[in-house]
Image 1 (spheres, one colour):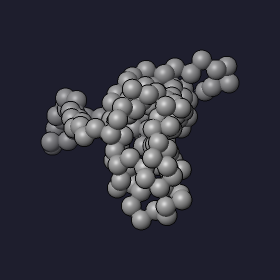
Image 2 (cartoon, rainbow, N blue to C red; image 1 turned 90 degrees about the vertical axis):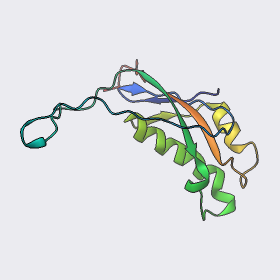
Image 3 (cartoon, rainbow, N blue to C red; image 1 turned 180 degrees about the vertical axis):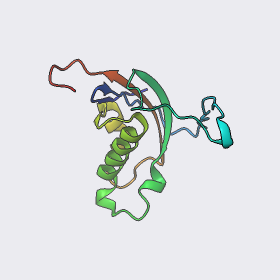
Length: 129
């Protein structure tokens, strides 16, 4: 698996395997019922603690109707966007192995799926929030 990183108050690692079809099961945490059938919510921001998750990014549907010479650069941007949303941070760093995998078939023939490992990490920078 290749790797990449996200950071802000946290960093995230992206990792790649080959294009493998895989299912990602998402389970929701337990809900606490409140009067009138409403669901209780915790206040405040989501926690930014370090975590690692595996995802399959379906690049084919993200690159539909994209001009040939812009497909690989767009794929990298879409991976970055996906990681930022999944890990709730703006600082996304993509590992060179992931970049090479996306570009492995040239600018036009981007792999249809990419299996990615994302790791949110603590940011040790002095200037970080």
